[in-house]
Amino acid sequence: MIPMISSDQEQIQVNSSDSLSDAESLHDTDSKQDLPTVYDTYTKFKKYTILLIIIGLGFLSTFDKLIFVPALPTVIEDLHSTETLGLLTITVYMLGSCFCGLIWGVLSDCYGRRSIILLALSGFLLSVAGSYFSSNIYIFLVSRVLQGAFICVAQILGPATIADIYQPNERARAISLFYAFHFVGSLVGPTIGGPLSYHYGWRSTFIVVEILAIILFILYIFFVPETHQYIVVCKYHETGTKLLEYDLLVKPTLQNPCLALTYLKETTMLPYVFLLALGYMSMNIAQLFFPIQLSKAPYNYKSDIIGILYLPLAIVKCSGSIIGGILSDYAAVRYMETSRIHEGHVVPALLFSVLTPIGLILYGWSFQYGMHIALPVIGLIICLFGQTTTRPGIYSFYTIKYQHCLASVIAANNFVQLLLTTIMLTFTAIIVESIGNGLYFTIIAVANILTTIVPAIIILRKIRLSHISDKISSQSIPLISTDDEQ
Image 1 (cartoon, rainbow, N blue to C red):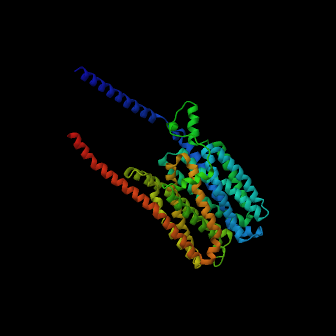
Image 2: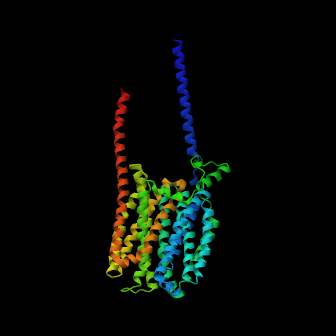
Image 3: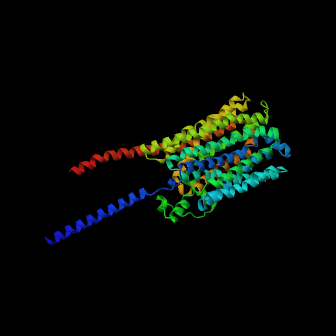
């Protein structure tokens, strides 16, 4: 009997130790839940202030790219150049953004957001001055390359900064505001640039860009702190305050910029990379080709009229981005509750992406047959609305999946988008001359449809598997309870 008693006592001790271990584990969990998060370190006012300045930088990045586009024929004439070199001023701008975006991404992930943005903005101010004082097309091209290389920092670190300060379930709306004004800049730029160039010359557009850049530079210095989550968490830990993310974040290291492209091969990202790249390329080619077509017969519009026609496009891009962000947040919550998948952010994006090919076909064939100006404008509006509602949801999905290397991931995506746009823009004039507007934009439309199919299949499959898993779980509960009763 004595061994039996001893065994029982040992079992009681084991159970007691297990209970204590569970209690300690539960206590640790509760204590961690009581810790403030990195998102709690920002007041609402501080978040809105940072968001407003970041939105301004996003606006500047596209405002600068296209403000002189309505006066492109004048630039070509004034610098004694050709139409091909004139279009190249936009191509090289995007090429600079394409490659330097990778560098800004890895530098920011390692050294933080603030110092990298300030460095890039300083270079941008100098390059804008170079564009203003250009005496020939070649100096102008070099200055435009540098402008694109420096200001692309806003496109990379804008969404990354937003992800640093906003909770995952709040990001889509904040990112949608960033892209709303990012897209508006691409249309407000020509709207202002057209009349400005007409009355004061094309060089006056760069004075406006320089003034806006100086204002944003000063605001950033005084009101935007470092937001990189690892740096913020370490700073608070040094002052004696431990944040919830302290044990979760890993110290970043400087990587080869080209390694950022390795993220593109991941199956969770690759389908959306192609979807964004084709859509971005289609949208940019359509709107960059817009003033060139309107300056020719049968339209023969001047730069001031072309600039005014960009106004309704700006309204559509702004509203489309905001609508896409709101619907993305709503879908994310709904699908997380019902299917427990993060891809809920992307569902509205895929639905609205169908509008892009419809708009491209209408746009291309309207210009092909010289139809009333209302038809190509409506086609472009449909295309732009489809694309601007698509992007916030996909980028919000990225911020959840790749928080630790978000700037590099965004840079890799932008690299593909800008590189594809640069290549296609270089040959667009030649291809259109050979096969016509209608067939060219129809081919692009078909490519956009094909890139939507794979992501749609992936999401539908995940939703179906989630429902099957729920059914299996619900069926297993009665079996377990029956065994317990027995």
